[in-house]
Amino acid sequence: MRSAIMTATRLAGTPLQYAQDNLATAAAADFLRDPRFVDAYRLGIGTGHRFRSDIHIEWRVYICCWAAGHALNLRGDFVECGVYTGITSRAVAHYVDFARRSDRVFYLLDTFEGLPKDQFTPAELRAGLDRRYTYEETLELVKRNFADFPNVKIVPGTIPASLSEVTPERVAYLAIDMNVAAPEIAAAEHFWDRLTPGAVVVLDDYNWQQHIEQRRAFDAFAKARNTQVLALPTGQGLLIKP
Image 1: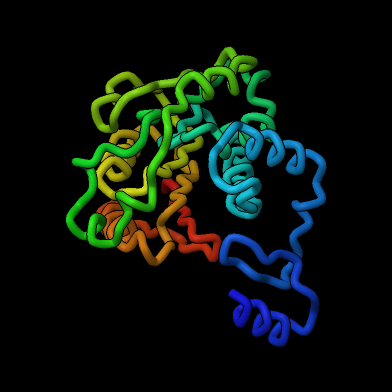
Image 2: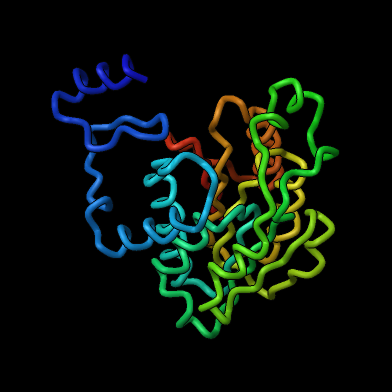
């Protein structure tokens, strides 16, 4: 990371504006000083996660907030698959003032007790993802984090089994972050026809090297639907419903 930061500084000729989460850039990062985003990020990062004190994923959270803000111009509910403590979803809920969106529901889907071992492919096991991603039980914590949001529906269970409980007529925002390919593709297939044209799907793991299985799976998913995923330097991917 040190050499990448030094190279970026020399190439840009101006001070870095952001250097966190494997992303270093001299491009403007004005959102870091936007009071609405600052408050949203503070609330998200304060949901009780057990990562290090501040994991500094501001740019990734900003992408989700942007996509959610865009979704307000579309018809449909919000969905997040892979919640953990609600870092991203809590930030998004504040950013778009979701408690006041009484015409919409925000569905939060997770096992809330970690990744089922049987969902890892042999390639994902060889990559060590089962050791990299270990989570504690968080259901009661998430309930407390969203206690002030009457239009947030928490859906515990393993995907795809729990998807039958989530059948909104339309979806305007979809975030997927389950660390392995099988449940993520199952979620994408379940919600794709419900996505409003123009809706953004945020794939948190798509462009990380260790998640090549997810990238290949979503590239095939997108190709079958005559579209493609936009790879982001945050490690995320964006998929827009045509």
